[in-house]
Length: 350
Image (cartoon, rainbow, N blue to C red; front, side, top):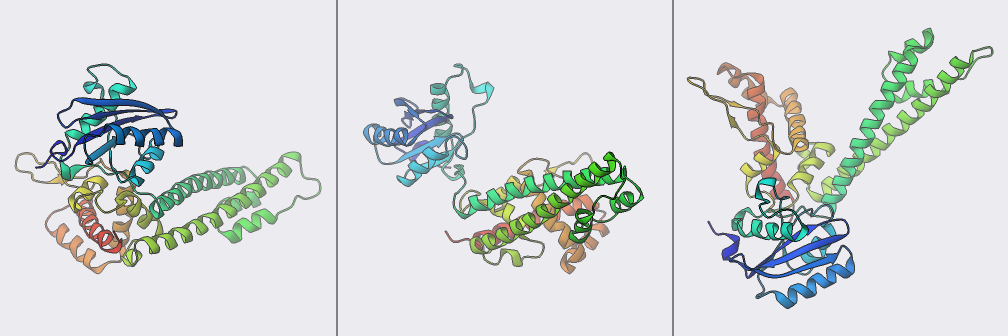
């Protein structure tokens, strides 16, 4: 196994913050070459490039940064544009802080963390572009879904405490037609203040819910278009829709982030976890990994569970061997992760 320390001339560790970044350039043997603190702006990024050019002992330089998708995103983009290799490092754990806590100390720990990595296990940061656009849409969709669910619950609770007509409306499905009917209702002469306020608030909520449904539909259309442009044909896989497919893209990110399909399965939390004891030999569900990616795979498997003849045959064979349905789903999620990882690598251009 080749280590990063064997293939570089220097490593730079970076501790990133809102206002400033601390950098340390370290030789392959761990000796400090130079240190620098820069402001988190374009001027600071230019100073960092000049500092690297002045102090680097050779052209093979790897930069390890914390927060490449938060405070360090600007510096990461500038250094990547300059042709440097960026590696994502974890925030130091308390057990490693033998020398205390400061920005320069954390920058050194980041550099040492990169030096200890194997060459084929470098954690590359997630990519920008269409993948980032998909991530933004998924985040917006989550917020809209949560808000819409809260509004529907609020509307039902409001109607349940109203008159007989209100209670009848509280039982119906909140389709666009029914929401329109609630929004069109007007007060009657002689109604008390409470009823008037209740109907006005129900009208407001119905209009907000209807607008939210339209926004979600537009969000799904945008996701579908971006997904087809980013990974043509991925949505043709049974069970893969714009939302689950978008999450697959966001988590997979780009070629090289996951070394192979087993690493992708581990990232998704669908790799098997031994749970054997005595004469019992089995594996249990993995509760780690990227839970949003795990949920996307779960949704895909549930669709195949209902509709796919091959999956039906696998379920029948598993039950015949004494497997429980959760164990069968765990295996199906693992196989689905393998299939979709290969599909992503084939569909997305380098």
